[in-house]
Image (tube, rainbow, N blue to C red; front, top):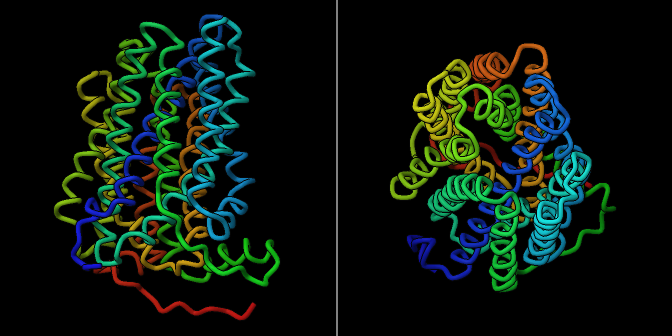
Length: 421
């Protein structure tokens, strides 16, 4: 296979791309609408004040994170020891059952806060499996030389879905609260078909190590390689302090007063900025000074979050969300490429699951942090101070992990040193 082949010319990569687009489109739509309905239910049915309802949004993030945390070691091991297509299909089927349950709950009037929290937790458990399994397939079907471009195109799938899903769901919600979930259900059915259509991929040889030891091995690999550790933890702590996404219902309904449709546009704005950057990177992938650009991306993300939190203008808020999405995409693209190219294939599923855990921790625990701060300070200062904190974290990581800023290219930054079992 030619090293210069374009990823989209590879059949299995096209199926991976379509699977990612469909599943992200559906699951983000579901997550956004659950958040909106939790906030609206708390405000209108339970009679909570905005600060109390915003705190529930933080708890919703925590509900998704706990199963993700508990199941991450198992997910990584399964991605390295089972057919990754079946792992992804099974987790997508769980998300399908969640979407169908919510559609029926809205149609027949049995929606409640406990049900929404339980299904959000189930989604957190399902999501932990699909990320490592699908991500780990890409290096198996795409040549290493084409991997940066493949990751950029995968980001287009993710980010374009992150625009279309919430925007569509917001407009559907304004028409009928069950429609967003029926929409997601149709997409998830198709996604199961596309992932199962990928050709079988060789499973790495079984290890004689105990499964617990195999799970720990992935964490040990990341821990002892400072470069990987810096990449993973940078996103963890920077986005942990961001948390703008979780507070979007509060901004849409009580700060900017733009309703369901405005919520969909707010949630899609960051995806639009990220999608445009991903499109640009797919044609002109970054090749030089990648470490410094990753750090700058996180710093700009923090700046955009800070300004968004203080904004009372809907156009400015949309612009800042697009900016932080674009900056985050630069960071995500570089970090994802570095992690994939610096990890052996037999550990790629486990390392991807650890990276996914860091992303989930930063997102869901960031939502919890924002919810707690909003309960004390209100959503505006909860988001603004979090953005300032992300800038501070970037400065600290620049000093603590100098390997990051010194990374000039995507070439491996070290030689793997395998330890004896």
